[in-house]
Amino acid sequence: MSQDKIIFPDNFIWGTATASYQIEGAAHTDGRGPSIWDTFSHTPGKVLNGDTGDVACDHYNRLNEDLDLLKAIVPNYRFSVSWSRVLPEGRGQINEKGIAFYDRLIDGLLARGIAPWTTMFHWDLPQALQDKGGFSNRDILGWFDDYAELLVRRFGDRVNNWITFNEPSVYAWIGHSIGVHAPGLRDEKAYLPCAHHINMVIGRTYRALKSEKSTLNVGSSYTLMTIRGEKPDTDRKTVGTMDALWNGNHFDPLMKGYYPAVMAEQFEPYIKGNDMQVARNKMDFVGVQHYTPFEAKRDTSYPFNVIWGDKPAHTQKTDIGWSIEPDGFYECLTNFKKLYGNVPLLVTENGCAWFDEVAGDGACHDPKRIDYLHNYISAMHRAMKDGVNMIGYFVWSFLDNFEWAEGYSQRFGITHVDYKNNCKRTPKDSYYWYGDVVRANSLVAERDKKDAA
Image 1 (tube, rainbow, N blue to C red):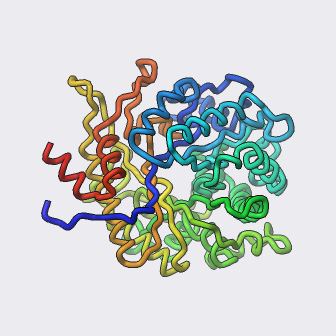
Image 2 (cartoon, rainbow, N blue to C red):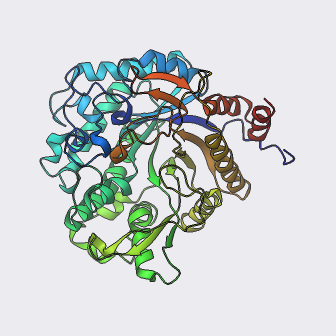
């Protein structure tokens, strides 16, 4: 390669990430209660091939092996707590065996020199709370307060980095408006209070954690997507509504204290008192998760009369059908700065799905993933050079895993998991490449090394 080497600051945060329901398995072990994803995945027709997270990657039983794999490549690891594992009914009786699992995980990370980044909620709400209305019920504010307090009380002596909520837009819109994810609702009147309550939960939890211990590093993770019209003549309201559902309905309350104009009137019935002051917040960092731009099209058969459209025919796509556009990643990051100011941004997820298999030589070769990661990390670095306050990057995902409604059909991991062979792990070429990048802190130099080999 002839291009200049890409050097990151010494304090840049490098890591990789997972989520509890996607990897842990042990769904009925040691007192864990059912979550909405247990219910959803066991409902015929909801998940591709009838897949469930009952076993997933069996991380619960292979913890030390996974921690050793992490130690070899990253100094930071983002994981989520299963609310159902520590509070089987969502509130009330604490499951000490569930707490003990996360104690082992956190202690194991620290013993290996890895900083834990703990996500409080990554979509797997206890079913007992969903039966009471879940996030569409305003009582979730108190339920989450108690849950967050438990996590910080039990783990806050060792965990300094906290992510309150993973991707509010996906949980609210895809789970409550179009029904593709758990809890599988297709109802504007479920979506609107759900989204609003999430925004308040994030604000309340930040204040509570900082009040408890001001030195904690607290943020939340959001989808950050460029929205385009499916066709050049797509009307502005359709694009604006889709942009609000993916981005603005959560970023605007957080940064500005109000909802986007295109949907503000619809949220009004759910706003009480000082709700918007609670939602508005200056967090220690904003987690952003980006994979692809999305195309919007008008469709009156869906709530809010909008759904995603087809990708342009010429677009290069990953196996899940998402377009590969690193320039779009750069565009998202720089536009965020223009809209909301130069707040610290942490990429808490970025990655790609390719169907990788272990080859005859016993290795798992995934050159397309290496190329993807190289190009997206380069785009992020370009945004940094142009003044965006990027503080870190977590690749998604450490392991191939249960990919929600797609089941096990998609592989995002830098470590291959053989679901038919006792979940055997095989680090992919991208695992070694990413570890080299992290150690060298020089992206192009390590890609050159791999290309030369």
